[in-house]
Image (cartoon, rainbow, N blue to C red; front, top):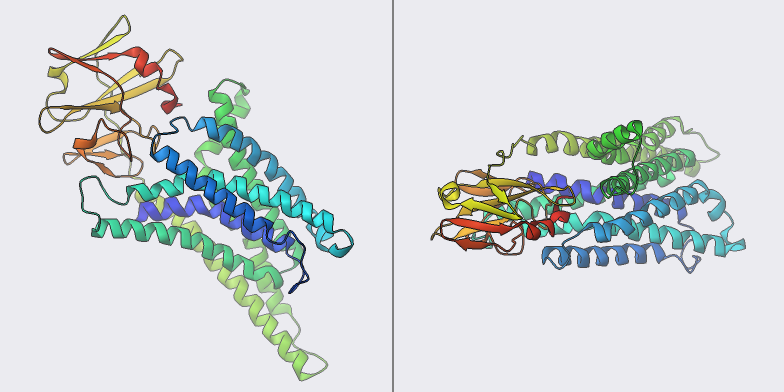
Length: 423
């Protein structure tokens, strides 16, 4: 449950905060006095969400087995649209003030931010949606207490991100405009840093760009602190929350009549409440993504790879090495230089389960053995031994091999063709 909760929270937080911030900065008019583009941001989220569902489905069914093919152009779009959204938020007051005199300017801003929301949603949600595929462990009944706990963790993670964004939104009328604008700009800047880090990682791995040592070390730091950047996206709203509380205490309670006095008092209470609840939301998100993640990240070390015969493009593993019913891990360096791993385990009934030490859902995190079960290191799901060697879910990615008297034979060309799963 806790693993589902923190994973889904981190995945949904960025798009939730982006949607909230852009809606606050660009919302104008009341009643019917609104621009024709008033629903474009909602349409952008819908398109991004539907695209994420389709992409996640194709990944789960192994129709798409090279995520870089989709992620590479998507990240370029995200980086460009993050910059555009930053500029729009910076100019939001000029765009929304007296918008009737320049509606085209507001429509363009809404169109660009709708694209930014669509790209960010499409980028962030597939991994979240794939968490739905691991509610039920292979071989277990559909409805179990563990399944219900995982489902509850998933729902609470998404709800926490949405509720936090809604709480921050309550400060739109209680905090000084500059403070909310500054928080929105910092949030988008952090989102840009996250997207650019992912893009730079792909460029580096494909050797399209070779970064100097200093920039490479910065890239490594950013990769290792992506969760910290997600937390920072919520923490930046500390600026408007404090400003809102200060404004609540400093709002004068005097007025020309009792109605004005009551309005001032009500505003002061509302401002203090909005700021205080925002502080609670910031603390809650920060604790969940620090202490909560720490609780789920118990250090698990994969067993070292074992030796095997590799001659003339043929890998040979003898039955004697892998007939004990335990997990055996092997390593291979592909022609493109990628270091790969594959696993072999003798299943009940004498057949062998063979596949990459990676899956379509969790990438190359790998598997380990615990209490007689084979468990995915990333999502902590136990794999049914009978399904190892078959496609789908969190199963190891299968590949072709041959069984000859006394040994398992694997053509290295087969492994070379699957190196993308470890890039």
